[in-house]
Image 1: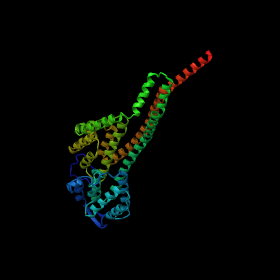
Image 2: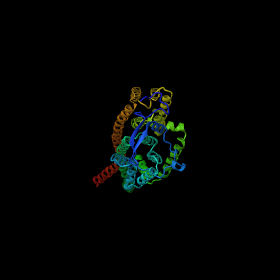
Image 3: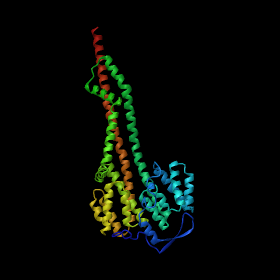
Image 4: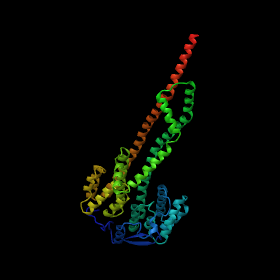
Length: 421
């Protein structure tokens, strides 16, 4: 596949003949795909307003169907299509047997739209929360070239790897979250039960407390009274509201996204590598499906959430449009794109194997992100252990040291009184 100088409208599907025979999934009848027409169809990117009334540009339902449920639906759809079931019948079966309400409504709407004679990609396009433009255009390419199940299989593999990565990140956070929660509950119990008993005992004995014990008791009483909750909540809401308004500016959004990628450990080891996985995997999927480089870059740029990375994709697109290739903009983005990734992508471009190289990069970085997630979890555990240890030491120093001193004083005075008698 030639990459440099690829212009919009350039052939994006490999031509093996004027036409290719296939089987329509809706009726099961033989059909002929004209690849010139398929190219024209695919090279026109799907638009969420292309063939739908304005109201349909909004999500049909109030909540998004969980990615896991959507992936299960797509996986089952592939199995039915591989078994020779027509597309319409497969969708009907899945809509009737789905136990999850939101997913059932989603599949039912897709089924009805396909039943009315529309393409599957058009039905998916109606649900932008569940199916992004990259996914829609991949399905569009698969239908146009008669390779729907092949494309679906690739997309599902990608979506499942994304889902698994999210699960691993959530799993790495579970132990620290549980540890912090238990610690807070124990401290609350101490504040409500233990400290009042200690305070009453000190007052009854008329003991003078050191300043650190007095300050500690005052701090714990303040925290347990929950008086700080309202001002803290107000401050957090105000800060969040300010941030939401601040990032509405494209320039501020770009700055915020750059800062996210620079955060130690989380930004550099997870967010940045995840962004590289996102654009290389999407690029590989789109190019493998026969979509031209220009359209691929447009779609990938639109799908990427981080604006710093999207800006790099825009510069790559402009460079390719000028016939200059992808190397220069990647070299200029060395703060975001490692040199080794740039070298591999440039090699893939020059050898005509960009799809394979991009896929290899995505797989390699997935492994690295998994290691980074595991490392993050391992790093948080000793840090939290140290913090909890410091809290216990503070508690002991503030309460038990004065208590021990008080008991020593009482014993000493008792011994002195006994000897005097």
